[in-house]
Image (cartoon, helix red, strand yellow):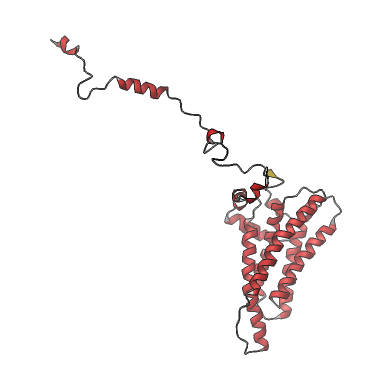
Length: 269
């Protein structure tokens, strides 16, 4: 009796495991997952390079992105690496811009030149000199005529934006092409970074230029302009070692000092 019960099939009983499970397990065990490559994520299916993340490509010089065509110039992703800075890095570079005699700013930014300072400092400077320039003009007029009423000159903002953005973009670009023509291996991103931080001192001195004492204003702007001009010239000298091109340094110095005088004459007269 016991032997007959043990020989009965049990696949139809409740709780029994059908034999097909073994076949499914076999198929699962035999399944080979597609090759995974973390360097290509997400994968480009079907060989279509239009899908998935695209690499930024190699770099030219000391941080300038290279592209096979001009489409990369108009791609936002090509510039994200130049905004990859934190507060400590930016503060350290701001402090370095206030120490013109060191002349080692390019060494500090060699591994990671940024455009964040250029954009942030230029934009801040536009609003600072436009607003404080109106305040300084009002205070000077108030000293001579107590009945003068406050009025905001909107043209200050337009002029400040054209001058600051135009200078911060065009002047470094001009020196980049000039030094390239003279045979120096330069980087336009590093030039934009250095010239951008050189404008930081004008933000600080703008608050002092509100003081309605003309002699003091001239002293402040000359000291600030001279400090910024020395900062640019001494750092630019590292690209001219071994070349008798002092005229380039003199031109950079005069342009920076001329910008400071322009601020004084047109916004803090």
